[in-house]
Length: 265
Image (tube, rainbow, N blue to C red):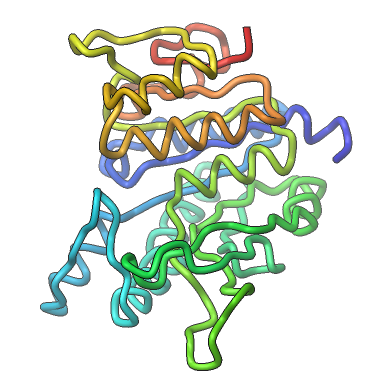
């Protein structure tokens, strides 16, 4: 990966911040217009659940993760790869940015295998092909990525061609693969909290890992911390900040952010 991509920022927009991500889109466009290569990964589990409910399809979760049968997989592909992805791309382009919406299937960006039979069609990423990201970034576009991957390893003949992948995991894998300058998670909480509920501003990778092992970090924070640790294999900094506050992304880039930063000391 060339030095240009060392300056890239991977931003994960969580589904929970969609209702209030107006300034996030502004900040993404601002960064692009000031010469920062930006890659956006988005979630949208709440929107998928909403659409499944409309279709009277029950949603089952195991340890906070959606069990993805074929009906749920079709909905994930349609809603995340279509509706949610295009809304974000439209918002960026509408504000004068230049964005292209893709999924992990496009350009065989994300290759995966079945992660756990209990979860159904949920993937573990085995390979990231960065070619399409390089092409888009070089051409001056923001890739906006929906977390769906090719089912490319150990695939039975009758299985679907794609798998649902946790968006946090996708963000961590992409940040590691391109050697991003930093990975930033925009969530609906202040950051990582200690056992008394107080924000922890700075952590080393080992301290962050200990919060997962001890159970202090739980639920949706676990995949985020794991993704940060994965990214730090080839990225200097990973942050978890509150994306529902105005201009948190821009403030984070300018060094005025309030959240949790995990970095190699």
